[in-house]
Length: 205
Image 1 (tube, one colour):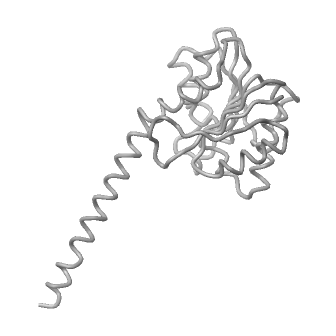
Image 2 (cartoon, rainbow, N blue to C red; image 1 turned 45 degrees about the horizontal axis):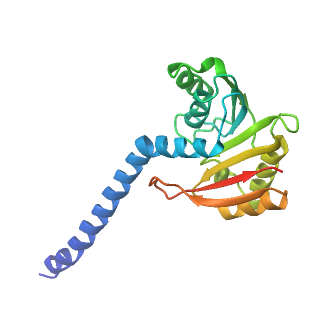
């Protein structure tokens, strides 16, 4: 009898937990498809690209943001850097990014470089815009993340634009950008993504 009563008590809990897990899985599925594409376009719209810029994607992974930028650069170029670590993104590799760019017809507009976000192998003021998506929070330690943001500022040209999409640490990024002399702000993404994310937008003087 006692076991029966316990079973009755546990069942509602299991039902609620199961429903919550299903809802989370559905949210992640939406985010991995239409959600991510929508947020990508939202971020790139805010970059106000004219088509002839030199754009850097820090932590480009399989190339979602990189390819989106390249499609908007008929007279420009998009450069993607990454360490290609599966622990940060499943299935990530330089070849996966190149294959996706080839499938979208923009392979000739991209360049892929293996590099750490904290030590970008580019001269000062090399890019008109720098974007990064769901990457910087993977860097351990506030000092490491600040160093990555400082590198983004370093390689950005005067009047260049920064767009950072992330699920955490966005207030931290704003503070680092402001210390470097940029005007920065956080905005909510218009489309729902899971986990919830924010955009950090900035412009270099």
